[in-house]
Length: 254
Length: 180
Image (tube, rainbow over all chains, first blue to last red):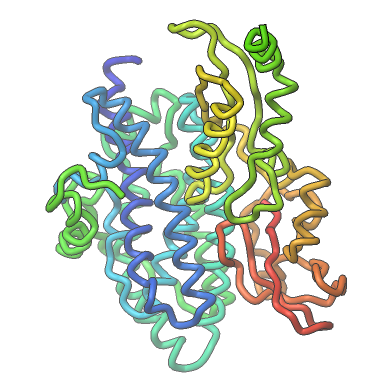
């Protein structure tokens, strides 16, 4: 391994792994609270797919780092500022409109990103991306169907979707912001420049929102920082629950 | 002498494939790991501690909880047949597809009450043209009465690999092993 790339590659793999780990954990919170039995199963299945993907990314991250940390140590024994997920995925579930809009914004971006990562010069990364993309595409089919159903649904569901879009839009800018980690991997042909995903993502959102009779928000100020470890308060509560067992009973297994 | 013959038989990979045919999926016990297309390769390889058997497995869905059990079952079955040096290797690419399901597996699924994947897994592309007219998968034949007049209830079912459908002819709900 090129020593200069070790650190950025580790960081980047944490981002990929943490995005799906945190969103998977969020979706897991719906278990037992879903609005319908079918959605109950959908959320649990989505969460399983995402956490399965997280295991692949974080295992690889630990190997690249080379300090003997495995997927479990990375997931359960890092502090909030060491997580590298985008802010969007740590946003609370809110009502079902919030959960669906968050999922749709993420799925649409995730599919575009994984399509690029399939071409990565790093063969292991390309393999994980190829596998994850098949699942992510199925996730997107579901989330965009729901965006249309709820957006072009009743006055109540439409109003809730408007509020969800309004609240979550500000967390989408970070998906396309490149920093030194992105530049280093982009130069090495390992990962795409995230800013290149912005136009196709917006086009996709415009088309789905068009069908859903939802207006697309215009240019606005965007939140950022998650990729660099600056998170919102919401992540602390999520981690407190997710990590409790391993913190209280280190090494517990069942 | 007997153990030497047994050892010689165990070295034969055709015999190992036969043993693997007896290892079944914990959720869908009518399918063997070979029916599912999970085992991609079986070979003997010179390892650090002598010859070892390497079994290459391609996992189905990233989050499928059955995969761990399946890996354990493969190991256990081969050890029971006297294979001592054994290593399971995971291969992600090419990604697992339902196109690898055997014909025998497909008919067993149907007999078990699960509709097998309809046709080859088309490469899923992100396409939202005609979103509202899009139907997940058409004409999935009901595994009970055979009618093609069926409708999707939910994209997700009791396991990652299945969706839920309903038959409009016999009115029974059923699992569909979705094309992936």
